[in-house]
Length: 129
Image 1 (cartoon, rainbow, N blue to C red):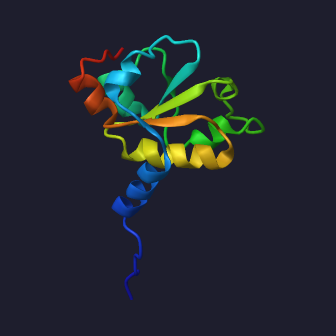
Image 2: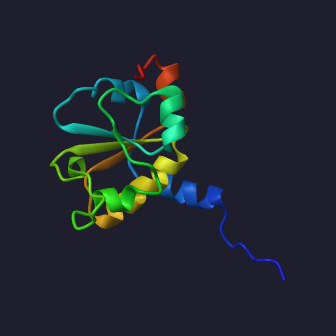
Image 3: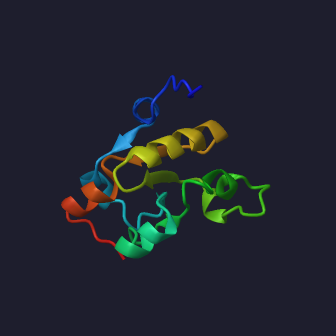
């Protein structure tokens, strides 16, 4: 008997986008290098290597995020233990919205999602390195 999926991936992304504050690529561009913001790239390593990342961003794939945030995890990244605003992004904004929702549930705050992800960033003239 096949599985009965009651919620689609689109449903979950839509809920996350409704729960997580968003920032436009244009507004986010002004935050590059700002001492009170941290950009977090949620794409996997092959995607990051292929296109580059936003300058200064922390690489944290969606699959490792919870371990990178948790200070008691051996995989903890100290960049997540700062009093700053975290700007999450992925390729188009869906994975980062889901990741941001989980990060908020873990107590990371404030967290915002980059609307449209790297696609919107590049379209707005944002630099990748």
